[in-house]
Length: 224
Image 1 (cartoon, helix red, strand yellow):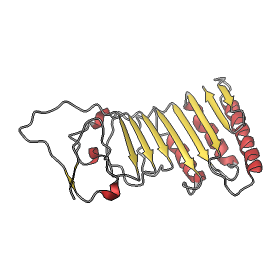
Image 2 (cartoon, rainbow, N blue to C red):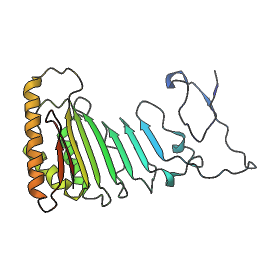
Image 3 (cartoon, one colour):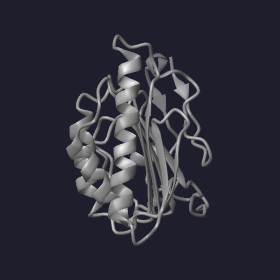
Image 4 (cartoon, rainbow, N blue to C red):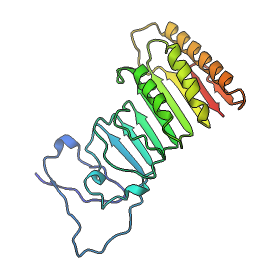
């Protein structure tokens, strides 16, 4: 069976689930067709659960130099597009293939301990990379279902790395009913957030940052 998929400039999602698609028939633009203006696509979503968007294969449909927001959701394949004006990145559980361009101004990351095998290693790599992003001003990190307390080394690395930002968020969340002592773990999370807050305040005493600690003690929001 053939499925004819018309290309549209505003919606690149296929209406038929991927497992049902056996063959695709694509109408390419005719050489004599009237040319269209550049696309207005500014947000690109990439997920490991779906086929790559058409702009990977048909760059004439999408102007890469207009995309300023990139949404990564468990995307586990090499990323080859060059996005010169990329400003904002949202990452869910996969950092390996995300292009951290020097033009990026804000990064939002959500990591699930069960899906991200080594959260500590991932955070260390991320913090090391921050020094190569001269335009980065906003960083938000949310870690779900962390069954133990992050160590002192990570705490110090975060405190030293965020001083160049204008706003910073670090939160520890519980999403599922995991098999660990929830009361003990949340006490450890609150201890870590308190230590992180104290270290950042000591290192940034000349800036006098504003901060909010969430009511459960497991989240920190700061403005510098």
